[in-house]
Length: 99
Image (spheres, rainbow, N blue to C red):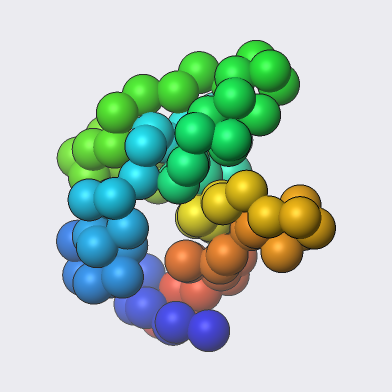
């Protein structure tokens, strides 16, 4: 698990920046779940579940992160035969160190 100092910038997570470049879209549940939508199958799935998808954008994701509750996390999601295998942790819940 990646552990960061409290108040870190998402741009400090190189794998997140790399994933943003190849993601098809991103979405946020308005509370703590931030998802990078990585393929067309997942675009279709998230759309069917009434998520609002937007183009990948680090500045917007940072704003979502700052507005999220303490349960916040970021996952990248790909289409797989076993749907649970498609969710990849990018930033885990509680990944920030207590100061």
